[in-house]
Length: 213
Image (cartoon, rainbow, N blue to C red):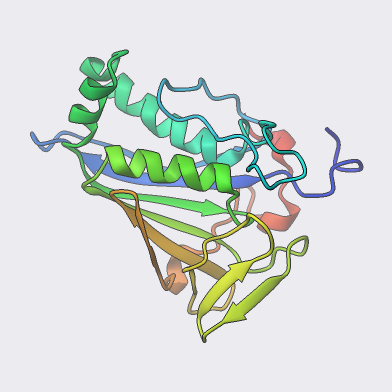
């Protein structure tokens, strides 16, 4: 869909992580960029988005299967499978047993408030990687969805976008949450962690996803 007919900008996010298994073997990703259109990411077996909620005007439709955040989660799962062949399994319990052995940190920076479907997927992988902390940040300058401050640094976003318990960053430009074991907590984003610019150094709002992939 072209930007001229899409009322919202295509979702964009960056992924960075360092995780280790019980034997201290590790995999890292300094920074990878994903958008709702490029690059293509092979879906993993375990992390698919949810349909629109029952009270939504488009209830039951699957609108977010290609969102950047879901792609990033699947890219992480695929990286684990590539590095640990035993994780290439169709048995959910085997996958969860392997995933539960990892420790480390995953950073996911988003160009807009993550939708209900993306938040669901992030919670799901954080339950499996229960000893890994996910740091999820998203811009406070989403012009398409107004931000409402509640109770000081707490935030709620219009509709299904954003975390209710997110906290504002030091620079007032991003909201943040940590997610571990499927549980979310407000997170004050340090100045150095957001925003991150795509390749070429353009601000997120000017990023041309056509040059990714």
